[in-house]
Length: 136
Image (cartoon, rainbow, N blue to C red; front, side, top):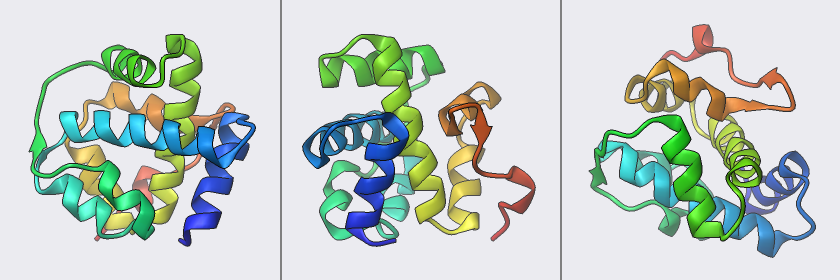
């Protein structure tokens, strides 16, 4: 997926006004994801994302154990927004990440997250990625 398409999808899905707002949401979400994932998984994701977005993921991942509400709260703190609004942004970013990476990579992300994290991939009530299709 190209950079312009990635940021446009985040703008549309999150109901943002600009690319700059999308970049803040992408940065906050991917930095938080890097804290949750283990090992080189953030680098594997970054390798499949558009160039300007790659630096938002840090590797190795920190493998911190926190629930999805804490995920949303950390994104909110980074964005300086209420948790509900940041949660909408995080879902928009993660749904776009799931589309941008291969099915196998999406499966690798989900394999490191508890089932409650499936909420990250729901935007506007639609489950955008079908886990049965997440094969290498």
